Image (cartoon, rainbow, N blue to C red; front, side, top):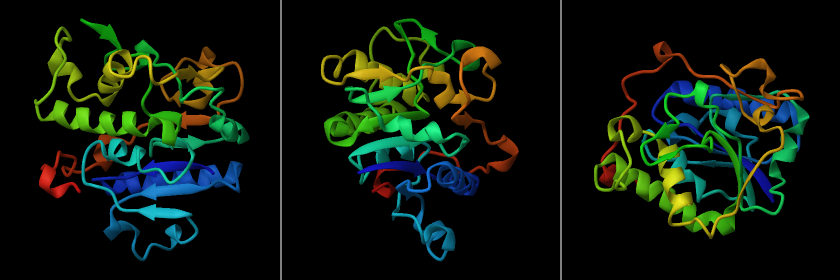
Length: 237
């Protein structure tokens, strides 16, 4: 079974945009299976959750998505950041892994805070991607574990700088794992005309040839509160 997972944690603004995203998915793919990971106190009693195939609790963490990825109930999973919007029926094509274990879009360096660094380059965008849940399970678990250690200053690869600018990025952890621990184990593909499946709001208009499928915006900081913080391990699971 194919399905989308969406993860909303820490800030209620992400939960609200998650529901906007769900509406947009169903507008263009009415038969879509969706699993929403969000805090129980948000989902309980919310009628918008009644028609979702799965609604699951998640930890309070700035990267709860990494915790949730390996827990997808679907065989093939498409992960979408909360601050995305589906606007074309070709979203259904995102489940075609083309014989790969994972499908990504590429980062556009001009649209990010950091891509190249001493020791490597972050190429894969971690905000929208698809994967074979069974084949990627161990990798996804490690992505979460390594990132958690990364943020607690318990792990950092030698020769990668500047750490201060890189340490908050889960895409850095993604890069390191795929270039090292899983280099010959996880087969990664890039969507054809990839920008249309993850069109970040500051991309140049000519980045994709066909209609945009997934629009990727950002929630203004004024709509976020001070609850965006890391939570001690004892409170996570």
